[in-house]
Each structure stands twice: as structure tokens, then as C-alpha cells.
Length: 289
Ligand SMILES: [Mg+2]
Image (cartoon, rainbow, N blue to C red; front, side, top):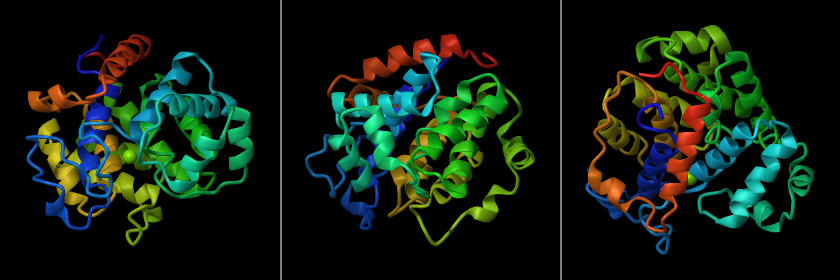
């Protein structure tokens, strides 16, 4: 396997950021010093160190890509089956109610038909798509999986920016300092669509994640910054997206503390992410450092 991995790092960042997700009183959750996973006061029974919807949907998308499927029904089926096998927190109320009620991917597609969401639900699962080797296909698949639940310019564009950024890092298309130029060249002036007044907007979350990514070269400092910079906002999704990009970038060094890996996924699901990373990086090796 090419170094580091992917989903396991996304999961760790998601689990770490989860401690502060939409927590207005920042200190209430605990110190943002990477010494431990903190308990989100909004979810007092949710075990610290446990990943949320971001990683679960990325895992489901990874299964679809590895199975060489990519029809809307393939994605919907994977989301429903992955959730029902191991229900996680963090989904929007509508998404969670739909997943709980659904019995099949067909049922899911029927319930979500015409949904034009603009939140972060589609971009948070799009990073894994960027591992694929063909950029046009990356943008196409990112858009397709987004349109199922977020059939809007903003929902689709946010997913394409995330997938494109991961692709840029994973396939060695340039340094992080070149990333914005690459994205604008391929996707246009995406930042014009960021709503800075709405912290739940997908593009807003993506813009915050990219601000953190370009400002650091260490995974540890990146993770801390995502939480600090995202105070009171969608910190787990910001951290998960930022990590998806940075972990595949050669200029980033991996200095995440061992204590976080020790305490990650107390329920034991970290091994499944490790297995998936082997399969993903065998199938999509990238520029391989
Ligand atoms: Mg989440």
C-alpha cells in the first residue's frame, strides 16, 4: 500500500472534530491540544473517538468505487446498507429519518427525488472519489453522487472541489500552493458561490477546510487549526475534508499523536477502515511517494 492511508485518517479527523461540532461554548468540550478525543456536550452518550456520518458515507462511497459501480442506485444502496449495519451520529434529521425508514436503495432514491440541498452532506463523502485516476471521471462521479441528495449548483460544486483537491494531491499534480489555481482552472470561480453567512452551506465548509489545508504542512497542526478556526461550526466535517486532502499531499508530514490512534474507534471499527485503505490504494495508487 502507498503510505499513510486515507479513510482511517479521515475517520480520525472526523472523530476528533466531532468533539466540537456546533458547540458554541468551545471550552465546554475540552482542550483542543490533541491530547485526547473530547466528548461533545450535545451528544453526551456518544463515545469519544468514534467517527460520524462523514466517514461512514465516505466508506460507503469507497465500496461503490471498488465494486466498479457508479449508478445512483449503487450509491443509494451502499449508503442505506452501510448505515443500517452500524448507525452513526451526525446525519441531518431528514437524512437520518430517511436512512432509518428505508429498506432499499430504490426506496432511498424515491424519497430523495428532487432534493436540492446545499449543505455539506454531499461534499463530505466526495473526497474518496478524487483517488480515481481520470480527472474528468472524478468530476463526473463526484457530481453524480452529489446530485442524488444535493441536486443544486452549490451542492454539486462543493463535492467537485473536494474530489478535485484530493485528486490534485493524490496524483501529484502540484503543490498545495498551486491547488487554488488548479481548482479555478478546472471548475471556475467556485468561491463566488460561498455563502459566508451560512456555516452549514457545503461550499462554506469546503472553503474553511481549504483555508486550513493551505496554511499548514503538518497533519497535527492542521487538525488543531480546523477545530480552532471552525469554532462553533461544523468542525468534524471541516476536519474530515481537510484531512482527506492533506493526507495524500507529499508536503504534509504525519505527526498525529499515537494517543489518538490508540483511542480511535473504541468499538473496533478502525480495522475495517485500514482494510479498505489497502484496497483503495491498491486500486488507485496515485503518484506513489
Ligand atoms: Mg459528522
